[in-house]
Image (cartoon, rainbow, N blue to C red; front, side, top):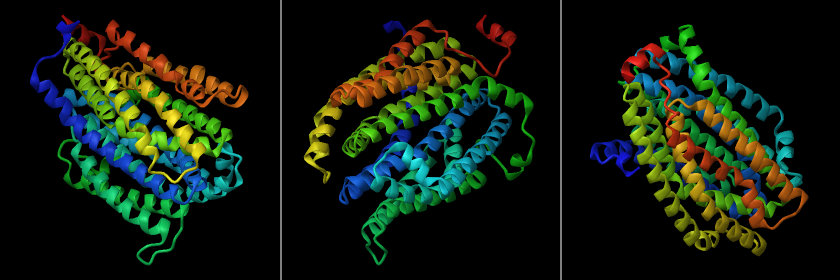
Length: 462
């Protein structure tokens, strides 16, 4: 198989040209999460658990938007390979409209049912009360964050990645300032605690929106999107292609996000100590996976662009190269998580019970990070970027609902297994996805040219 590994330096330059800005963007976002948990951790476990569980609402919307744009990105990356910006504008206009529909649903639900939403995640009255305030404030962020995420995720498929990194960098400092000021009452501002963290995040989201709005309509020279494109009726051919190849990605992320929320429900009903410990672990995992996410994004974009150019053999060669890279990064992530687990936990003002749970979770997650890295790069990068969205839908959703959710519920709420065993059950789907991704990559059946007819594909193959 080593014959399939790409040795051309230009390929790796393309990978890192996408991966590094994406990794920096993710690192900035993780930095915000770290600051939230560290600052709120000074107020106690109730505040940290409330923000963590309430944040699941925003996380669910973010995942759904990611599904929308990843599905649309299957089309736009291949259209970019064919040098067809007109079709890309049509896809982007459609994506904005769908994102705003989702935003409306989340906004109304968060404003009218904040307590009911928090009750889904936990029975702790203090956590519910604090979390409900967070949910109501974050309700005002969905429309603006929907525009920002849609814009940057589609821009990424045409190779425009640095603007997102710069935008989230600015947002990071805005969030840091207002987090510190509004959580603890500094610089003449009121001390709002959990509500302050939510308000700081809302202000940062607005800053992101302003920058992304100006860039899309003023400075972008690749897609050249205009206001008039929003008024044009959705192209039926584009819509049919999206429903066939993009909708499975959206469906995938919706079902996955619901499953992820179910995992939070399971943890929330175990104990607030488990929730607090898991929020600490999530920050560590996010820190170590930023490069993985960047490489995954690069794998998806390059797969789509290469297939769009009609270079199917090169696309397969790239996939094998990415597979070896994923194994290497998985091992690196494992070592880093295990090595830094105790120093990380020492930063937080938590009880001894929570500290012990966090250490135990991080030890298990160190090993599981190998499987998650391999599946992340190969399944959500190469396979999805290559148009194999239905296969990814099946494996991702089935792994969540047939493994992680039922096994997590059984081990955590019924059998009362030890923390390490519950953690393995909650993340068991990643192991299933890892082997599914490997088998699919090796088969070569994942290459789907969604923008050409069967006759055109046959001509290229010849």
